[in-house]
Image (cartoon, rainbow, N blue to C red):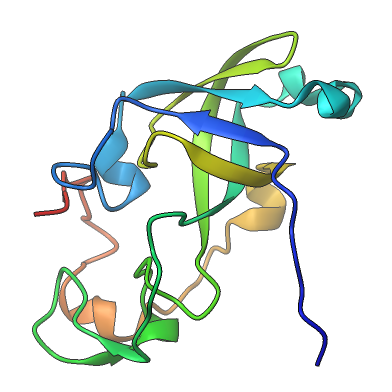
Length: 160
C-alpha cells in the first residue's frame, strides 16, 4: 500500500506546554481557552463556519512517536486493545476533539474546552452537528464498568 501523507492546515495553541497536567479528554478541558492559527491559504474555507457553536478538530499527536497494540487506559488497570481506547500512542497518531468555537478573526479561531497540547498540527476542521454526530443509544464497551452514562459528571482527568 502507498504511504499516506497529510499537510497541516494550521497550528493549535493551548496553555498546555507539556503533557504533564494536561487534560486527557475534552471533558477535563472544560473552560480551557486556546486558539488555532489557520494557514492563510485556507482562509476561504472558513466561510460560514462562524454559525456553528462547536467544531470537530482532527489533529496529529505530534509528541507520540511509538505505539503498542495493547495499552492500559487511564481508567483501567487491564490491558486493552489500542483501538478500544483513546490513547495517543497509536499506529497513526491522529487525535479528534470537539471544542466550542468562540469566534473567528480572519485566520484565527478562538476555541474553548481544550485538551490539546500547544503547537499541535491541525489536519482538518469539521462542524459538529449533534443530529449527525451524537447517537442516542450507544454502548461504551469496557468503559461501562467505570462510567454510568445516566449520571456521568464531567471529570478532570489529566496526564500524570
